[in-house]
Length: 189
Image 1 (cartoon, rainbow, N blue to C red):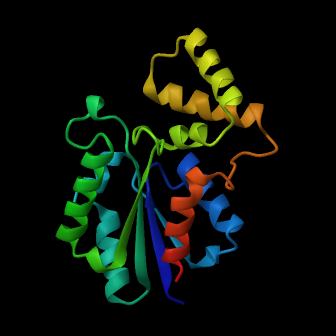
Image 2: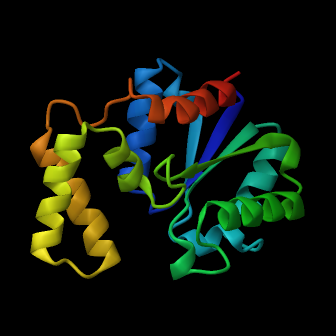
Image 3: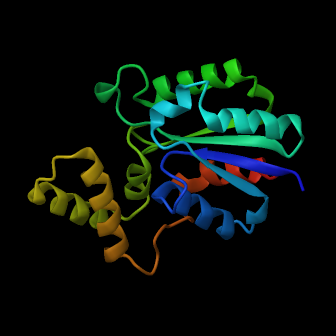
């Protein structure tokens, strides 16, 4: 069976990125057995042509075991990383590494962020899809709690969201998920 590959940030265990993608694949009733997830750990690993995942992918493509790739990477913020931060920098860097690796004919890109600001990460996308009053409640809590660390902020934000809205962890009917849903459908065609 020919498979597709999704490359994402985080590790191979159940990460927020992997969890969201898995739930969305199920929601779209796509064949999850046809997906191989490649956990790239940090965003910077996407831009290292010698990364072991790329070697494995090249071999799988050559052996016709994988025929399509989807790169799912956070936009983050340009002010935090002038080279790879921000939507445009991330997109340009991904296109360059995809071309360098010879993956252009097999690949698509989805940059995770708040679709309005084109900044942020998975949690920014999630926040952009919830009602304003819920978003304000979460933002107010984060403001008064004075969390400083980006990693803690992302983790805390995700946990608050899951605790506050346990019956609907993600609103996949929201228009801000439409582009990702289409990218996943295209991946399986």
